[in-house]
Length: 104
Image (cartoon, rainbow, N blue to C red; front, side, top):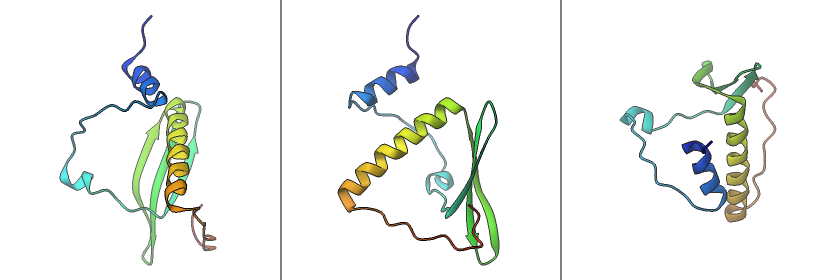
């Protein structure tokens, strides 16, 4: 049984090899969305990540992403690696204490 394209791509990344990927998107989506808070929930088959914006007019859902547990683990690994690289380049990130009314 051969490897899937995703497994091969992950192995290349682990070896330090990157692949070019063309991503099709709309202009609106490619601009991104700002989020200053999030909620994470899970069930047996999926994780749900709600990206939120807390503003003077209340808390607003910016985006909801639903992923498999396996993909969540890959996301966490990628975030940890990139956070490490960021702090190597720019210094340690100091976390501010959240306001008492913020969603956590």
